[in-house]
Length: 429
Image (cartoon, rainbow, N blue to C red):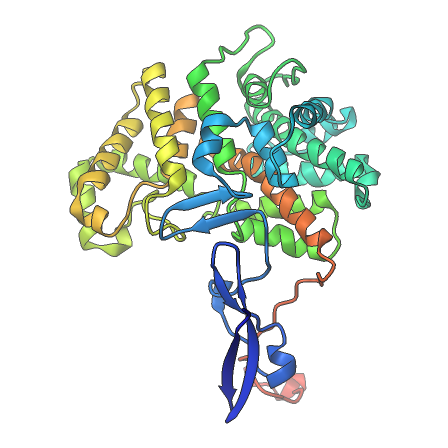
């Protein structure tokens, strides 16, 4: 039975419907609030505002639950490939064998960039951040595929989505080679998604990259576990840009720019910078932990999460993967030693356990990526690769919604009231 919420404003009652999701999430539909009462809801940062009803991802931060289209992330991590997970996130169901074969074929068919795009890479100066290159190249690629402006047909959308999800790894690898000044390595049609990305990153014309199963699996997990995460900053950006009827590539490029921020996709980079700071300080991990308890401004990066008030379910999966990667590679790296000591302290110290400040997904993904040999500047690029299916799915959900209007938040103006223009010679110095 639907219920109503009564809000009393200026002594007058106003009734608004309530909304309940399939997982019993509750909300108040205030879409008619301003029209009915003249008031708006002021919610800095939208942390209490539901911008949409979505069928893609469910999160329960209190219980540490993450599901894509109803499927627990733990099951997908065990059984699924990134290609299959991307299909699930974008289209809503696990693919049949025939559909997965077609989808994988489209990913392979569209993995090459238009040859003219190679000249664009030469235009970036040395030292360019790979996220700047990634967002620019995604936007530029739309110029070579004019059909993406109108994706009403399912087959057209499917091809455009596959092209974007496939080419983002090619752009990422080419950007890395550009930074190093190494020859570009082309994707191989006989390789799967993750293996192809690693060989494009680390192979040379005179040397093939050794694809270790532990490394391939860890990268597979990183991509799957980042495929979507509900209405975060970058996803909300993609939805907002898409609501203007901007094309898929322009919307995804905007998502890349939002993800670039240090408070969003840059979190795993901050973990490595923190570890480097600890090493340079010469302090023991024990001293660092004790100082973090006393001084809240000295918080440890990679511990706790804005959404999860329990153990981040993605972190549990990546912890096991990181252990296997570090054991297989046998790396002697002081930063990784510090990371392991911090992990042990956080998982055993009552201060962290009681406050549920567990290592999060950024902590473990940073450790894995560093161990694999991916530079810190590329961490957020890998994040964007994983998140691309989610962005595509949310863009499609916006465009498919018959009730959708352009996103246009309101505001409460707190600037000066009406003023009169003052001639230059009468203004105070």
